[in-house]
Image 1 (cartoon, rainbow, N blue to C red):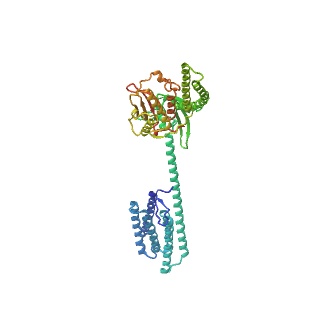
Image 2 (cartoon, rainbow, N blue to C red):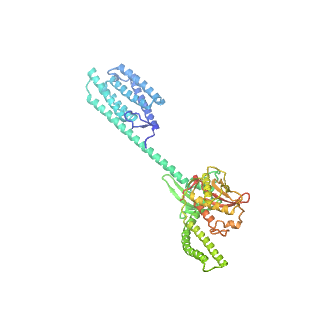
Image 3 (cartoon, rainbow, N blue to C red):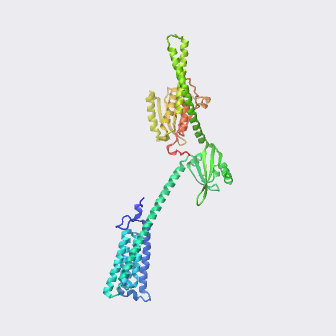
Length: 545
């Protein structure tokens, strides 16, 4: 990961890879301004003080007077421009370091050259070059400071016949390079540390967002609370399980959810040998609660996992049905072989010319054939049920899918388009379901509507929303079903038709529940039969644990 280009300054034109965070760079420049203002002010104060300052003006008092005042004025102006940020950072930083070298070299010359000791101040300037500009520019300013000191000392020796101290000048120049290089290394490490910190912060932020997404999309409800039962956080599934209305205020304490939950939590904190409890809420028969302790370095939290028992029972029922399906498949295969033999023998018996069967005997063979066909249809349905695969759910645009389905159903069954009418109450409905299972459910509902409904009127397929869930309502305009039949409507092998197997609606309901959908029977406002299939919304699917 590279630093943010918008928030990073690259002040050295010779080292494009060295960058400084913008705010940090301007802060360092302002700090260096304060240092320069203090130093330049001290030079001016020493000029007007009562102390013996003859050493400061050993060679050129007039030059010292002009340079120290110019240094102070330039420091104030550069500080003003730095505070206002009227010019680019790179330009200001380079001008400030360059001017510092010039002013301090001139002050050193006016004060007696190397013997004045002012040259040591260039160490701070070269260090500032490493921090403020860095890269190869830091070494450039160190070289410039060394050459300035060497040139000044050469001029002093030649002009004033001063003692030659070229060794000292060389050592001073070497110190400039050393300090500049160390400052550059320090700034580089700081940059790398900030980059690493930024990468880790981004990683932590991404992980936190991912954890929040996973927690919010869990099927189980999660509640985090303190020891005093004050709720720290919860996910959406928790509000769904406790059936908290959207307009209701958020629960602050466990007692706001259920007094029974609060009592069980208190009992668990006293005796944690039993970490689960069953509570009852008005919206659910039973809710299973699990308690666990969460310890962090700073605080201790308590996690409560809420699970709807009906969902658990649904999963258990699916497991039982899978086992039953394998058993019935084996039985169906065993029945199919002798059934085929019976059917074949009956057919041969009815066609045998030597027997000359009477009409009553032919009727008996027809009955055998009819029931063999019916038994074979039951076996086919049972095998279809046992071969049922897990749902492969996908995101489906319901309105478009239903339009395409009706056209396909009409083509497969040879019906007319006028037999159906699609009523769209809500458009742009998105669901999360296995398309194959949805087709199988609607195939059965539409076939039943054509078989038992009022064929003089259109079969209406209505697309709507019910409790924020996309629903398909199929109205066949048939007569209402009596209450006793309704109570057994979705049971296996229950049928009121002599030619039916009683597995169609049962399989449809099982497929619906496998996809977290619901299939139910209801009467319309005009006392006509209808079936309603409510499907899971695409953006509200939960992760099962």
